[in-house]
Image (cartoon, rainbow, N blue to C red; front, side, top):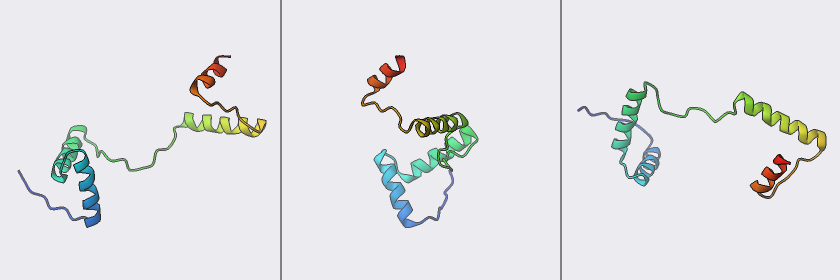
Length: 89
């Protein structure tokens, strides 16, 4: 076993400790689990960017925007059932 010292902002440490406690962990356990996951997956398990839509989603968004622009409005549905019924018609 070895010991590691980490320097971080006190507010960040408190906020992280609250999250860890919510899930029933302490910061040391979370840190060890993070390192174990890095070793197991051979990657750094962090989300480093925002979620960007893939190419297919971007095309669909543009298509929907074009339909709304051409027709002036889009159909609106109060429930998922009414949407599905309209799609089947």
